[in-house]
Amino acid sequence: MYHRVAEKDIDPWSLCVTPQHFAEHLEVLKQFAQPIGLIEMVEALLACNIPDRSTVVTFDDGYANNLYNAKPLLELYNVPATVFVTPGYLEKGREYWWDELERIFLKTGSLPEKLSLCIQADASEWLLGAAVDYSNEDYRMDFKRRAWEGTPGSRLFVYYSIWQQLQNLPEAERQEAVDEIITWADASTIARSTHRPLTRKEVCALVQGGLVDVGTHTMNHLFLPAFSVATQRDEINTSKVCLEEVVGRPVQAFAYPFGAYNKETVALAQEAGFLCGCSTVEEPVWDQSDRFQLPRFRVQDWSGDEFKRRLLKWFRC
Image 1 (cartoon, rainbow, N blue to C red):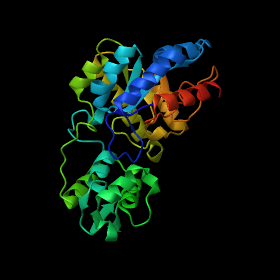
Image 2: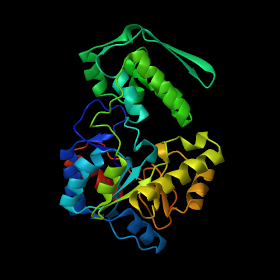
Image 3: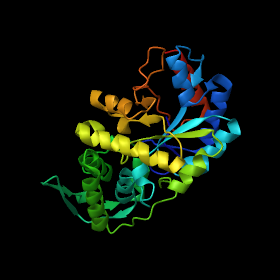
Image 4: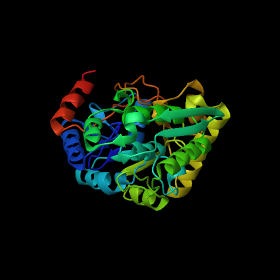
């Protein structure tokens, strides 16, 4: 499971793999594995005949660099892939909310001392204190850290605290909170080329040639278990209808945002007419795997040698 293929910047969620490393990963897959498409794998699962050492490449979220950086390499190595798109972001012209927070809090410079938000009728306040100023040294230290590894009082700690508050919100409330933070920080809403989502036109370009397929990732990348069955159903069904309208053909695959779901979510994915649902549980797919809870290994910005070591270990699981 991949997300972004781009040159590295600060990356609190380890979502980015450089083009060089991605090419090395594909070379390893061609040498030591049998890359196949997701739908082909699901059909083999249903037939209890999964090819030996078969692997499936997927991307979550739907970043534009999946088209511009990943697809040319997939074509070069002739490796199929499925990109799980979040249709609600296709025409926003904005970055995903977690990336906008990162751009505000984890870039060098100063911010106001106090942030106040009203989140679902509850007042929340963050006093930045020493974290008002974010130096080049702070940035270099956080470059090596993950989102949850910030020390109390640090910018990274504040970032993660706010991320936690926003994760489970409905889309409209979450967007309102992010907009308030952008105003508070006097920040831009212009999306970075390295972080922006695909547009509708780019989704169509992505699937041209047939090597890359698309699935959905809900309409707005919601943490589904936090919501009612009705809201989950709307997020799942609307995303399928919207993406099918964009590509002009049935969309068969679904991935749970944040890898989060409950039994109702799984039933809704089946009800919507998907062929499969992908989780983030890290284990191989077996003949007895549930096709609506398919496990996936998350890939990070590893060298080809490190990726090879992990791949061979996964095959021995």
